[in-house]
Image 1 (spheres, helix red, strand yellow):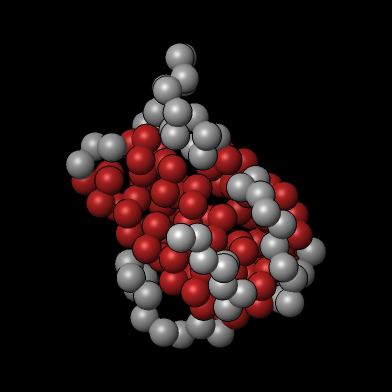
Image 2: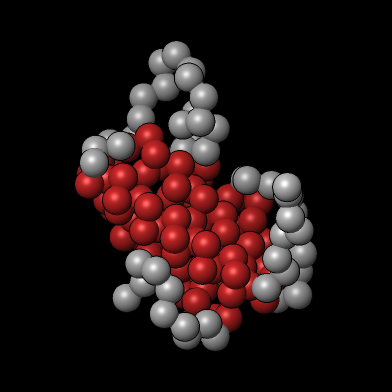
Length: 138
């Protein structure tokens, strides 16, 4: 049974932290494809949490750049994460289906993106005033 999506930013941010934790676990077992997918998901959910906090019902999209554009219009400090969002967009579909000639992201690259994503989630967490301890948060 499919439920109704929450409109509570905290719920979305909590899920974003879960996905970020999954990135760490998947990197530990050398699953770059899975780690890339969950990195994209963490960023998507964090950006949607921010937009919900701003009173905006996020678009039904997985496009991080679209979500970032809307978020930046309310918080310009998120602009430095554009390259991260552009790259992570590529981790969504190719990692879910067997395409020829699509190589998984490199572990070192993912570790750097994980570090940047952690900073982005912390910025959003602070912006929405969500101080509850989240899985994988520091």
